[in-house]
Image 1 (cartoon, helix red, strand yellow):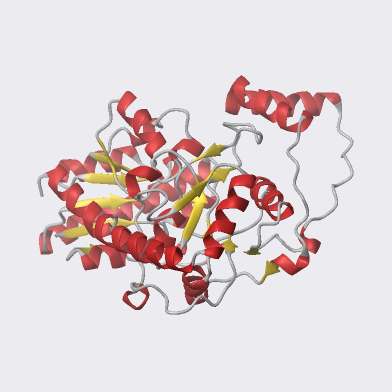
Image 2 (cartoon, one colour; image 1 turned 30 degrees about the vertical axis):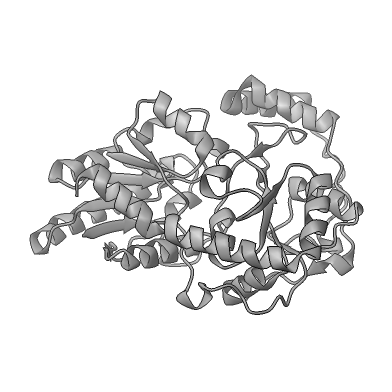
Length: 385
């Protein structure tokens, strides 16, 4: 099977949140499934995310999709392409090109991992795809209500073979890895205030990263009203109410003592710390205009696949769908509040044999049942390939 792959590949580095790992996970996962991944030379897919809606983005789409169609027409003469597999945001999609690819005989499958955070309804740009790969449990209903063909499958995750057995030693304390944000500071800071013995690694956690509140800018009433009207038009009344609620009733974000902050880790060091921490901690709540900070939006993230695949003893924030992936309390464990995080972490620290068993069971289940290869098998069957 030969798959044309579009998953945020880039020809240069862009000022975007981490995106380069997606290509690695898709390509390596597909190769293990015996799938040949074809990429369009010189196309910078990530560049499309750097432009706001407007002429520059339209120009990027026009030249990019023309290169794709030219490449496909030439490639089809050499050997058949069985599928176009993409990770595309709405602004990157050229609907006429998706229609043309399918006219040529290439079914188009789009993966998107932030449906519940980004959308209230499925964007019109997605309506022409043959099939949608939906990883979030909470997003399935949106695609069902939209009448769009979809498959609910785990996030595409791949780990090197050397890391596919549980670690021999626990060399790190209980650890959360990730950048700081308001909601993470709230739940982890509250837990540490409650005597949870853990450390954090990532940008923004240091004392000097918590800059003092900026002095309020003096704005004209007209400018303020214009900004509020723009927010209302873009996000709606409900989002505006959440915004006002967060301003009037902000969540408490305790300071994190410098002794609890460790250097950020990336690449193989990220893999090592994830798997060798006594307990690896996940946080599934996300800042968004779709919910208030006091009742945050939560959904299962890539880390819920990645950490178990690496052999971590994993304790993460409960959210819908996790019990479809694992046996909670046996493969992984979950908390719902900072107090529960503190208690569960204390239990795991005292029970080395349970930590070992959780590592083995979760890793085996993630690698055997939730791999890219298994998801691609289901997609192939659904498309009749």
